[in-house]
Image (cartoon, rainbow, N blue to C red):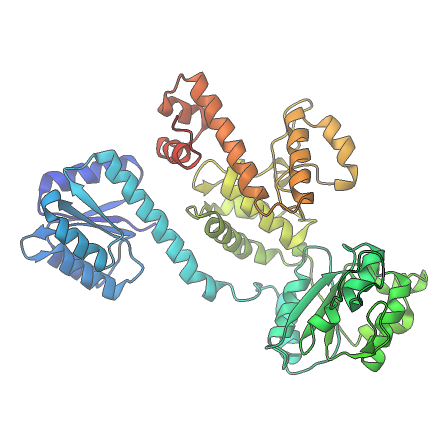
Length: 490
């Protein structure tokens, strides 16, 4: 991180702010006048600029204008006396992050500067994201082959079959194929055929007429109609029921279909992209998948590599997902050591890129420091397992929206019995909210978790925040901010 620049002609203010910021592990550079700052900007730039408003040789407002012209995203804090309120208004109009009235409380000033630093880091991540992360990321040869294939297919409307393990990003590839095709301005409609009950899937795909079955009170357009003029992405096509495969084959063959309960044929102007993690040739041999449909879908096959086949991409993906999680949560982006990255690169990631993304989200919330080290990684990433009878930490599970064990959802009941009681309670609450379609599961449970931790620590320390922060392994500014955010002031 770049240093904080402090500009003030008063040597005592420069000294106090410099020492206070250094105690908080910030690098600091001080200046006595605006001219030196403008000269220094030719070679460098700060993370945050803190400037007095009235100084010999130039004003803070003029400096603010100069800095904003060169670095529009740089947070600038203007220090001003209460009598300079009009100047403070001018500072805001000039794009200042905040103004700091003199005389000020030193810790309040440090907290304000910390907020400006967090804003600056978020701006850096946001600016870097379009360059570093277009639609897909990957420098490994296997991913470059995928990118080349997308490029070759960009002007084609041919049917594509995408294969690969769960979590490899098949829908991202489908979206890229759609975006760069002649149908890019049309709708992109995705449906997971394995996630919808067999009795409802036909209606989902083809729609239904009013009165076609019990509960069909209105006519409903299906996904084929919704995707007219665009692309329909059929995920997990290998799990489609056999009788529906026949209807899909007819649509692909003659471009017509009927709504459930309908008698009027409808034309289909849709490009179909299918995806599966299964071996469709084996499904054909087993009689579970129609061979003629397989050949109709398998015009062009695009195989996505597993993450363990492109380990060289793991550091880049990790940094990207840490930045993305920080933006999503509105917090400072965490950094990760080379040693921790090397450990991740050696892990097989059975959940592939999705598992890595969930891990980065978990680290953003749960890692105690701003720099993620090996010791902050979950036990499964370190080749270790928790000791018998020890409480297993909450950790990410690939393919899950919340970071809760167990990894094998099919064995959920058995795992819940062997896990600590509070983890079982957490899982049940997460399942209840997820089943109910609650859109704020992560935020709600995280707030409850953090709030209970801090409340318990404050109880044990009889309200002493610094001691509570030390016991929790977090900074005193972090606990103060969390107390305010979580409404624990009372």
